[in-house]
Image (tube, rainbow, N blue to C red; front, side, top):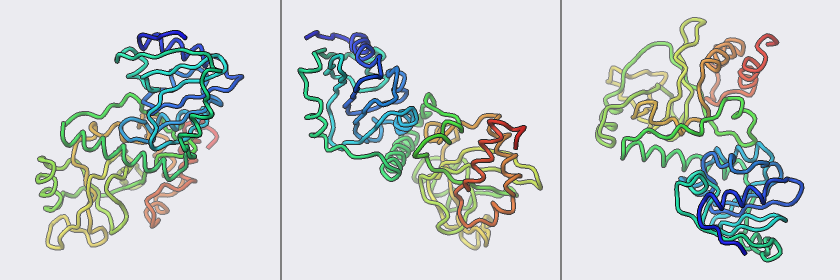
Length: 324
């Protein structure tokens, strides 16, 4: 047995355990944090069991591991931190996270021979279950709500360190869901939207979109854009903090869209909630894809979910625009 007195020693021991991917490798850890894939040199085929606890396990990190070929499962009551392979076993205080393994926290552990620890007995005790669209969606929603609460209470900017590209998002098995929203003319906030925002958040709202009943729910994400003839512009994310009905006597009332989806804080507060980063390249590809798919088709659709064909057009314009 070797005692590991700090996170650097733990990280180096894990590196040695997992340096080869030609044998079984297992990480049974409470939490998988942001950018944790950087601490596993060869993620393909590694077994990971973790707790789907919002604020501790990052859904983007889970998607990243799965995209790179890891076999990830969830366990609701897990608090172990065990890293096992045929090369040995690390039992430590450290989760699979940047905080634990980068030297930011005081961590300790031990390195023992693999035969001294029954990894399958531990796995059996975890009652682990498969990751699927539903439980990933639940983790993402709860994570968004925590980020929203942080922005509301502490007026902080949500961390943007783990933003991914559209192409990375597109390649994921269980994608973070988002919807599209558009407008043609500038309007104004309803009296209800301003009142609710001031009473509950202590500030006037930042952004809104006119919508019809039941088109959206609170804590959903919108990719919004302006339609001006054949021109697509103002492509930005919007976080739905709440939905409010507009009074018929309010100057903001629109009979076709008598509700407002409202974002309270400025866009920078929700960066960590966004499914992917909007880049100049994405804006260009999205505008071209909307035109190719058909503005009329988007406006006439009952669903605000982007059609698979539209998503493919965006991907094609990013990968090989000359072939579209």
